[in-house]
Length: 446
Image 1 (cartoon, rainbow, N blue to C red):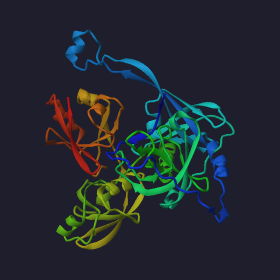
Image 2: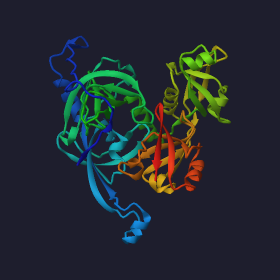
Image 3: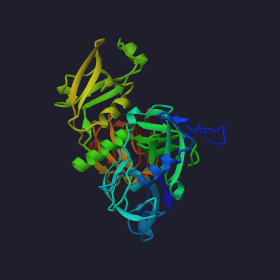
Image 4: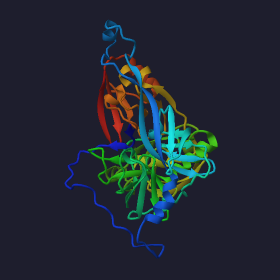
């Protein structure tokens, strides 16, 4: 059985044998603290272990069509096999049986089994998922469930003590403690990100588990780690409850996440670019394209405007603007502060609906099988987004990752699914120029 956590490798040599451990807080709400046991005892029943069964195809070693035909193998040459994986989840509504977890924990699941702290085994159904925020909502039917209150992740500060509860390595309920190391982390794995970083130990199997404050409130859903070895090195990430709760409510209200759209293309602005434009800013996101009849056009924004704040939150680069808008819902009113001709101005925009068209990578090129592609104007980079890549698929083996944006095919610019399909259809070998976070790389697809 595999245990689930999103792991992102880093090219670092670790000088220490392991991560530092934060000391226990001495007081909470002016009360002396001698142990975290009462907090853990109250919170643990709301955290569940999740086992997922899914069927995957074993790929043939003969990837060439001619070789398959020669040996009389069917297309793909694969045989289905059953695999199991493990993760965690948090009960947030005991009456309705709602459980928050990660999208990647339950993705492509054929069966989901939930184990409570007392050992009871329940079958769960998926109510909805959102790959871009890595949040999924499950439902179980049971009496006497214990829920965890949802806390205010906006009130979390760097240095706050937290505990992580989950199912690391499939061992069962495990509790670790640490502090909040940083806030607003982005560029970790693609998608819409605003992570809480913590040094509380998070390991494979902790995905979907709880990040809990010292009042026993849920402030994050543990989602990813950075590691060279696959184990904890003190750098873990959790999706803030502000995001998880918003995704859950949209799934319950609309059956899916209806992500807001401003209707602009943007480029980053740093101090050097601002100086060249004689703009009194040190960062932000400059509008380069405005879609007709979009929320941006109706709000009076213009090409060349530099967005520096959204809802009173500073915007220092293009990715932060993309995240800030993408985490809001259709119809939300957003206050946008921008700079035009050296003057700071404020406007309000009512977000439209982001409409995407998804195409399976295998329909474009066999080397892209296992990836999804979508045309969208929500990205800060003009191109074709990759919202999902199946683990172990041909696309994954060739280096494609969730959140990548394809900007060129064989040095030909592509900005839509149609342009990508057209460019790929004319070539057996593809050289994809991909934007990943703040850098570009080229992938060869055969």
